[in-house]
Image 1 (cartoon, rainbow, N blue to C red):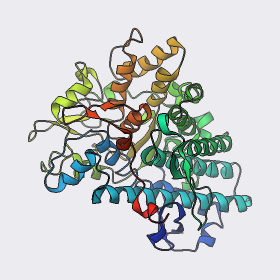
Image 2: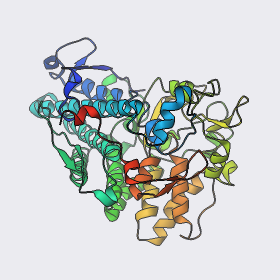
Image 3: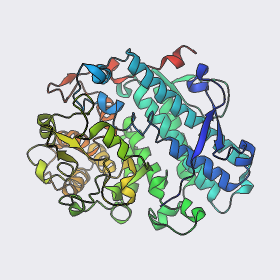
Length: 477
């Protein structure tokens, strides 16, 4: 397994002016100076690893942008309005003015921009010290940095920006491309998308010789730490993850053909490099089920404390006022009459003896030391097939794409496009549970009604879909 070197990222000032104008210093654990860190190729590698590691923090993909805030907004859970769950209950009602909602927004905002500023520091220092790098390592390292910068900005846009399909010209977030003390301007959402695409195009250019293109994900040790750094490509922003993110962004912007072009680059190598997880490795496998379908992940984080997600939020050992509950009737409605055939149902949702509902086990540790015990899914290959099914103008491609996933999950194929939109909605609900994509799917399509764990559909307005900019940002401006 890749050996990550934790980089301590400490404040170079206070959070008085957080957000777009905030900046951080990067220092490794031995507290050597920044100058020393960027004096060697390995120092740059450590700094970039630090960004990947910090993406696991609770304010980002350790909690809020994975299974917590964005899934609460997607109405995945049923909360009590009393005791410690009241804050989640209020957020599920889109009460963005509560103390809890404002705190969450501030934490997401400042931590994401902190990492963006660190990425800018890496990119700018690498540009000044190209001579330190061997072979294509300069392009690979900076290509990943450009892609991560785009990834973080895009998720900030999806959360804090307006509904794109109706208000792409409205001000949204700022896009930081330089390491500087001066603040960036808030930009219209359409300009943010342009900058995301520009960064992804630059990342693609620099990753043209990514080892994954010729050798696949390389999910095994090569020997030394240095050699392993350029392996485990699915744990890094690799070439195919960049193409997948391009497809996601183009679809969000309504550029369907461009989205399909990017998605096809990934699906072309899916069977070879990202094969569908074997049905029998999940269904009926009670000891070591691969519940995250690891072979299908285009980009994932490695979080050695991932099991804490399960024990703190989903374990049947939790009290009724602690557990994130999805009622049995709602779960059965989502998975439908064929749920017992669906490999995303019973292996991931286990019955509890002390509750009358199933508990979510996707992030629970299993009885082995396999890498998939620690994976945090961020981009799946199945999303590319959904994009082709939704956006392609080729009817044959549409059905083939959706049926590739349905068959892989143990379900019946569609014979026509009659039920395509219902199926796509159902697939997004099932495929990305606990992964933070459903709310953004609803927002992209500007859904006026969304299903809810409380039993009744929830009416949606533009204000529900846009988390307000945090006070630490608006006060500064």
